[in-house]
Length: 467
Image (cartoon, helix red, strand yellow):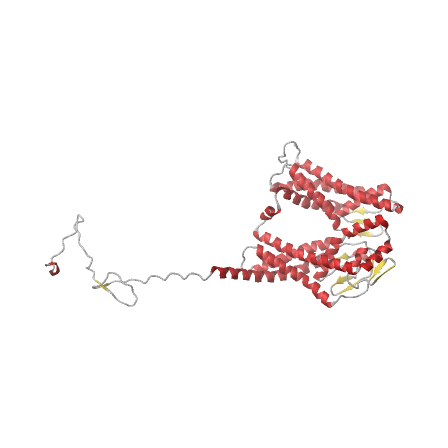
């Protein structure tokens, strides 16, 4: 690792600084999750896992916070993990990246990548060690994911934190090209509209089904400490619910088990786990609660609500196309729609990745398919948002060029070329324009002879010179 200049008093290589920051970030997150696991152990001492099991559970929760899946004996692979738990290690790595840049003596933005790499490599090593230490008979984390996922999270979060430590956001955005900056603005606008619509849809559905929510909570009867832990678990799954709602507005919807679907055109569900947040599923997807599970049947939602929900992606594309056109340099009329579609395609790629991480299997049985399909969400979002953004960008750019042309005014008329002149021997003025009149010119009128020394020759004696 390249040793960069450090402030006075540090004298440490950048690799050592990154290792210290990685251990501090991992230790802080692990301590927080250990307290939560210990609280659960105190609330349910009959679980029979003991204090070593509490420590293994805390390490497993730490790995889950980095979206590392695990396998349960007799159940299968568990990949339906809470996205909200990623915020804890992400925030810690953000702070760690800022500390590495400031303490490690990084002064130029191009060296931030070295600082992020110095943080990510030891962080991935700590994650791999925790995966090996937390593997036991009840749960076995995935070792490849335990290396790759924490490394990528530390590289991205630590790199962004380090870059922010050197320059404010507007200066960092100025490093992007005009076209890339316009695409980023359009994509951010489209994602903001979809996120707002998804949050509103999920929250409204949960409010409309508070009865089912309370029924499932009463069946679980978690107690005071268990209720607090259950609330934290549901808050950690809120980002997953928002992504699911976005997939619902796009049209493909999502599944909760093999052979099931929840979409604007209708829902087909089977038995659901006893988790209160599942009460936010679409209307009439689960009419009641029985025996600790929610039972769903084939139902649909109101046609007007389906139409209103399906309009949201096109509104997101309209806003994305407008923002992209305003932030972009003037483009030709035929290329503006292409850039608008590129904005929609980038939005679809982001949503596809989020959808893939928001779902996953809950074992090898009927719940092997839970959540939206990443490739379906990405493809549909690219088409819907991309087409709307392309049309909007084309119209907005046409109006923009038309306004510029109108403000410039009519072009000044070019000066008329001077007509050709011709001379005709004969008496008259020296020059004349060829505009239909012929003017005769005396070729001898201005002729004067000069001697060899340049003196004017005497006028000849003509009758006009006589007195």
